[in-house]
Length: 227
Ligand code: T5A
Image (cartoon, rainbow, N blue to C red):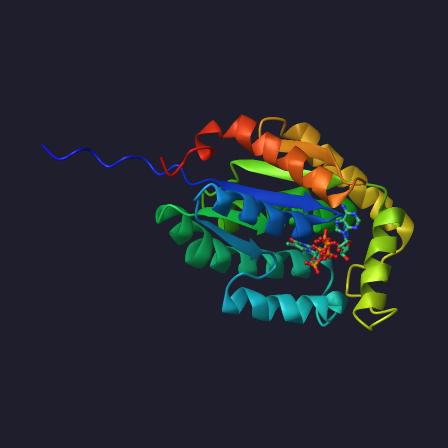
């Protein structure tokens, strides 16, 4: 008798938090750590990750949808997410690859819902549609004072030769970003099994180590995966 197929141990991990808290940096570092353990992992982001979702990303972040209001933007993020889930996240997990995603559904809840004022009923309905049953196994919420995070973003813009450049959401005022921070903390508090809050105002190496220790605690099978 052939062995029964083993269930895939591929994990779906999302990073959340405000602007400039270091999500993209840590997503890349986590992928590198997983690869060192011979774990195949896909790096992706929201909005985006597939050609159609990237087209929606450009529309929103260039500010073209701003005048349509937060409700319409929530619908656009959900449309991008549905394509991303169906055409990248679910197939990758099914083929045994871990998926590490820079933002996911909690961002819609925090930005458009809790901070943007979109009715919770609409947010829930969009989640139901766009996630198609797919929930992250773990969500890492990077948390820090938005003012300090903005200094990082401003420094990056200077280094990239684009001082003063901001996208659709970066231009909201500091008070708005403080409320956004509280929104992510509230989401984490309501989902204690899935979400872990990690202080992000620490050196990149130290943060990487804290995240890796968490991954190993949660998913011990990640060590010695190739053996
Ligand atoms: N959005 C998204 C919604 O409103 N609803 C939704 O449903 C979704 C999915 C996406 C925008 O869309 C909104 C949220 C966003 O506004 P984006 O460009 O992807 O736009 O925005 P962010 O996700 O905020 O990306 P950022 O690049 O601005 O922030 P990150 O990824 O958190 O930060 P990172 O890693 O790029 O680092 C920023 C700078 O800090 C440095 C880095 O080198 C970089 O220069 N840095 C550190 N410096 C010191 N110490 C550390 N530990 C550092 N870590 C990184």
